[in-house]
Length: 333
Image (spheres, one colour):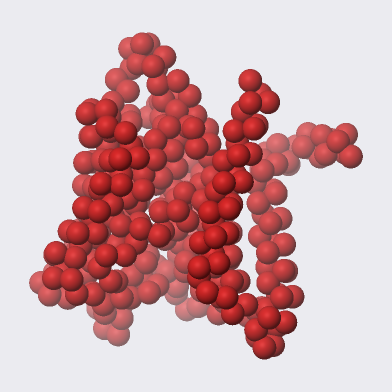
């Protein structure tokens, strides 16, 4: 059995795609098959196999995917960012309020969403990289700040992005156009850019090196602070992008929410092969992990269970993935 598994791992296409990624893809098909069988049994004959459920899962996967791509850079450096979900909601609230109350052009509001995310990322990166605050404490503090600012800016009112006007509804085509998942194409394109940045540029290589041995990189004469701060800026910027896709799919944004999406984005990263201790990361794995998280949520709701079950499963997945990562590192060492 071990020899057969080893022979399979040594196949050219397996090495090209990655054994872990192939396992994740198989998990997606296994989950879909499992939900297809169990949903009619547990929820009064409800059929799980239909196009609307696939689109619903993808809508959820888009913004989780963008959040996951951003936090992948931070985790690669050995840090963590728990503020991304709250920053996403804060960006959506502020930009939506500018659109509905101040009548700003839609394109400018979308830019505001990204700028708000980048600003939070810059602040977090500054305190972690230049003031040497723990990333855990910094991101938790910024999570509360983002939730508060979003509520204050909108006077604790929810914001509904318009969907009927032809002049303002074109941004929804970025999520779904003529029942086609155009958002998935954009997510894959952004993921490709993130992969180039992380694996093919000096900045990306330094981020990965920071996660492996930050002190060694610093002693070699590299200004580690700016590369570490850049990781947080990218995380915040992609949180602002995620806000655009969230409102494109769900329209209404409520103040004080968003922090639950942090764990799902981080779970997508960890499932995809990004090490929680830094030094190694998988962009493609993060995208696949986001699809798994979204499919899991859709399947749990389809079977008639509450979203609380997803929280339990997400937590268990993170624990299992981190445990497997640590055990794997111990075996290699």
